[in-house]
Length: 155
Image 1 (cartoon, rainbow, N blue to C red):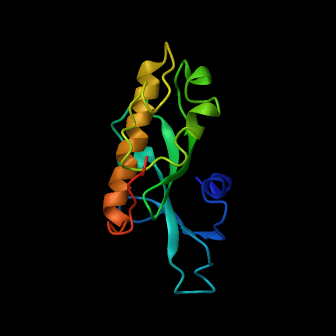
Image 2: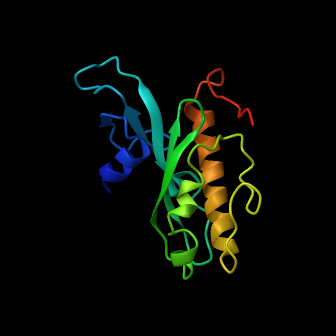
């Protein structure tokens, strides 16, 4: 897939994105085009939760969520790209669900009912999506972020 619109949504200030690649699979977001500026450094990463935690399933199957993560370990946003959940229309599809992840730190608890809003009758889907975002973000941070630059929340 070529999710250019979604990549731009997760990193609006980026002028270029790398192709999907690397281990684990990811896109890199750049503030300067690496084609014209070979020394351009990434400003963040975008990845599919299904590439990092492929065994995390909702009620009816995998949830394909695209996640943006900046260099400080903060989620820039998520896009629920695809799911086959019977209750997705009132659980993971409404804009309120992805909006609550924007600005979360990889150190946040990601607990449904505490810092993530619960949705009755869709608790399995919400819990699975939350775990997928939490676990994949922490895996990406461990793989690519400089621990000295990752910020703990000051709440």
